[in-house]
Length: 109
Image (tube, rainbow, N blue to C red; front, side):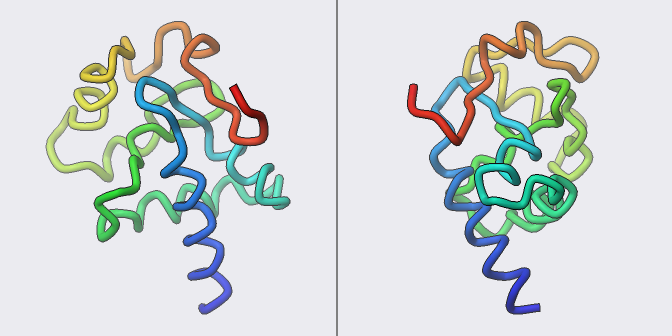
């Protein structure tokens, strides 16, 4: 389990760097960590991030811009509300203009 804890901390480290008004994907985080096939594990890390208030888990979505983790947030639409408060439009649980809002953790802006 200690290995998972270390992986989760590395995921949180990257998530903390996601700029306000931007999103990234589980797969992009996995890839920058050198574990390209571990997108699901990144999702598990995000699901467990509640005890880390400084981890903006709402900014991590699936590769198509879908809010697949929204059921892990309190309230029905909290994830969407948090994104919209940052200027990101969401329709039918999907980010509008996903490419425009996407932040790739492997590259500087």
